Image (cartoon, rainbow, N blue to C red; front, side, top):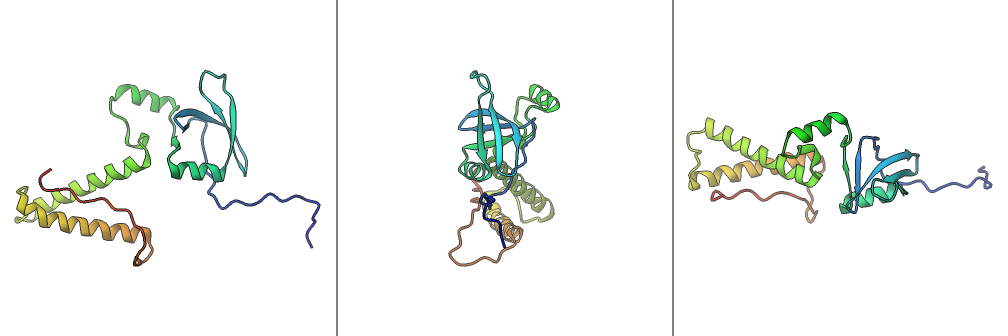
Amino acid sequence: MTNTAIAHLPETEAPSYRFDSADRIQIDGSDYAPVSRNKFGYVLKHLGEDGGLTISMDHTEIEERIKRGTLVVHRDWYDPRRANLRLQSPAPLLCDLPEKEQRIILWRIEFCERFLRMEASEPTVSRADEAMRPAIVRIQDDLLRLEAARQGKPRRCGRKTEHFDPPSPLT
């Protein structure tokens, strides 16, 4: 028997993100910092000239905004050590880039490293256009298989998957 006098808030299926006080949270291009958190969501403080107005955002909205790209989290942005690193290096850190850009860069690094290993170990692989074509096909096949294994789900006909096109030997 349940007590109907107690109001029950709907449970959410959205993941609960954990933000830290050193995190920089950008919402629609404006900077925010977390003030407090509970099981329903966050209170965020605007870091602009408006004196730190606060907004509340539940976990479902956070999840939706992250998926749409209108909410970006820069982990440990306000940590003094990370701020010092940004001053010393003109290039952004990989972890400071959006997740989509990180995936592209890491994929390119993996592709190049695989080609260099193949070039060192196989005499038929070189940087000539015609020698690169079969190597590129083999590397792309290997990376697609690895990505399918990483996802852990059997590939099914008609299912949408994301992959990166291989480089051209001309570039």
